[in-house]
Length: 219
Ligand code: SAH
Image (cartoon, rainbow, N blue to C red; front, side, top):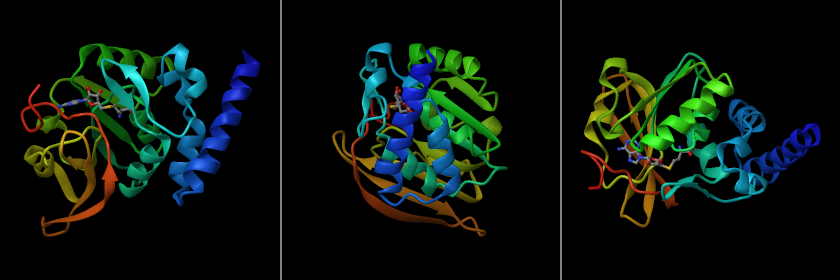
C-alpha cells in the first residue's frame, strides 16, 4: 500500500514536470493542485496505472476524464483567487472539481448522469473535499440560487455558449468552455468587464464529449 502511494506520487510528479510545466503552465496554485490530487482514484481500478499518462481516459457511461494538460490549461486560464466561487458543468469523475477545490473557496459542480454524480459525491466525501457542492441536473441552466460566480468552467463541448451561464457570471468573472461541432470544438474564454460587457477570445482546437441539455445538444 505504502509502495503504491509512493509509486503514484512519483508518477504524478513526472506528469506535472513533463506534461504540465514542460508545456508552459506556470501558475503555482495550479501546479501545486496537480501535484496533490490523487488522479488515479478518479478512474476505475483497471485504469489506475494509466491515470498519469498524457491523454484522456474512460470513466464509463461513454464519458471521459480530460487529459491532465487540458485540466491544467483550463484551470490556469480561469485566473483563480482563493476567495473565488466557481461553477463547473460536467462533474464526470470529479477530477477537475477536485483540482479547483484546492485553489478556491468553494466549487459548485453539476452532472447530468446520475451514476457519475453519485460516484463523484462519494469520492469527495472519502477524500474530505468539503468545499465541493454537487448537484444532479442540467448544468446548461447554471445554478441560479448560488450565482453570480467568479469563474465558470464547462467540461463538455457546447454547440453554442449557454446564455444562462453568461448571465450567472459575476462582474470581473471568467468563463472557459469548448464550443463547436459534435466531434471537435474550439476553446473559448469569456470575461465580463466592470461595465458588464462580455469579451471573447479563442484558444485553439480541442475534443470534448457532448454537452447535452436545454442550452446544449439534444440527448
Ligand atoms: N470534468 C470531468 C470531465 C467529464 S466529461 C472530469 O474531470 O472527469 C463531461 C461530463 O459532462 C460528462 O460526465 C457528462 O455526463 C457531463 N455533461 C454533459 N452535459 C451536461 C449538462 N448539461 N449538465 C451537466 N453535466 C453534463
